Image 1 (cartoon, rainbow, N blue to C red):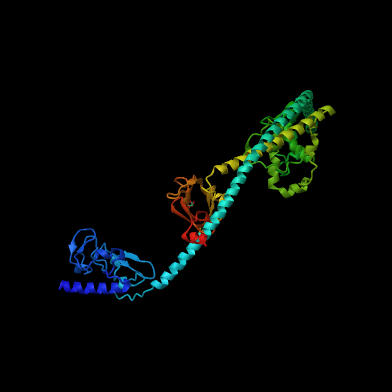
Image 2: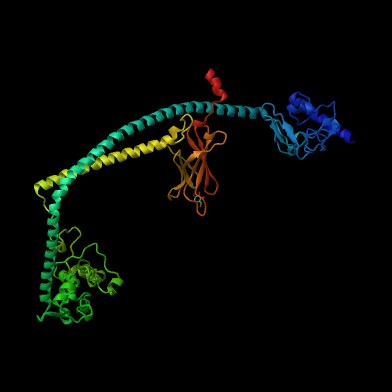
Length: 533
Ligand code: MAN
């Protein structure tokens, strides 16, 4: 019984095969293996594991370990079914897909006994595939031609850069010479200037001491006047009661000068003599006193004191500082009742440059040099400026040279084909980020929500395995949170324009970019025939 079934299946298989390929072979056998399937002999399993009568081939029963006896059925788990796919490309599929109801082969040969009504689509598919292949060939051809232009341009730029380096080096030699010359001239000009200014150093110091003394004297006169004014009974001391008698010191404007308000100026003492007044009391009192007299304007940039300021003992060391800080009660008032103040005090508006506080202290006069000294200072200034300019020029040249030399150290392709990409950047945007690849420089990622850029790597090296120039590595990018620094691999594929085709992140903080560029387009057969034409 088994052999009858064998025969029937075998015949069916052979009959169909004949139609498909014109060469007699069992179903699912590729043309290249026809000789192993000779119906006039027993079949020897292709792995040599056994020999079976030929009618066991494709009998839907797996006899050989390698599945070679069942190329046209799904009987062997490891069998291979070959579709001829005439008009398109042949295909090998696992034989488990034979008659599984799904059309795998375009010639429908894998579904010869199933309910799937597969039709032969090989002609159409073949045509489309040939068209696509032609298109690709043409693109490769065009890309290859573009690559030639990139090579040409790259070589040209390389020469230009090289020439520029030579030129810059010469220019730097000259600039160095000019710099030394200017340095010498500066020295020569500064020597007499220094000597001439030496005389003035003494004069300037004397003047500073004089100004200081004058200032002290002015303040002392001012303090004495105020003291005399505040010392109602002329007994040579100012008491708390005397301060309380002056509305001026009603800092919280409640209509009376409380003891506390008055005591503020006395530092725990009950009264103050002239000396104490001059050395400390006046400095604290002065702003309030002068403001009341309309002679003092608080600085507009001065911040009102904080609550801590108001409880801390008043700092008195520096009269300039304490003069302002100790007017704390006034500031308290300022922040509490600004409207009232506007009425009581004549606050200057911001544009008013007449500042009485400033007016009191005469501006420091510049020491005037005699004509000869001034001439020497001017000459030294000119020499210094000339030196600085020469120095700037040298530094600019050094920078430019360094950039160019660094660029020259980069491997921009065996034929300089990648040089034109140096200095360019290519972008790719996905749902979340815009990525940027600046070849031979860096890769970056910028979130679309407007946040800052993240560096994904700096130019590292060529890393292609078969062809070194087929991929690049950018490493040492920004550190990944709790991980290594970010890095990017860039695979280069042939295409007719430089374009970043895709960016993915296969592993966290490891990015993969695909850059299309004519620079990697190899010569195709089409190029050869094109060249011949
Ligand atoms: C950012 C981006 C991502 C990256 C994470 C890692 O969100 O750079 O690409 O995976 O940081 O924390």
